[in-house]
Image (cartoon, rainbow, N blue to C red; front, side, top):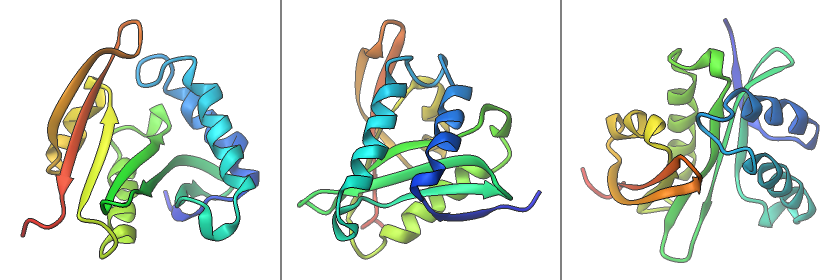
Length: 155
């Protein structure tokens, strides 16, 4: 399968929502669907220089994954809305999206933060992320939240 990672465009919204929906309810809480749509639509209303980076991984016209990040004043990037379709889990697409984001932010940040579910944390832990916190039911009933960081200044 051939694929490409490119910048998100507003016409990608439906495809990205389908990616999220394929991961309900094990990786995202039902209420997050509306938050996700809201975030992407809010991003579109910003001027181009104020939009946070968001990318899609596509094979032809089909979106198989999407992911982004934002940067704060302390030079910490927070990974946001990273996901691949459920049937794409374990095929290296999530790894490709993570690597793409990290390469995109190199030189701009010192640390990368994220929050994720226990089901996904093992993937990030293998990439060097260290757990920094835990919130029981952090995303909703039965869906805990793990906080983690990756230090990009360590060589």
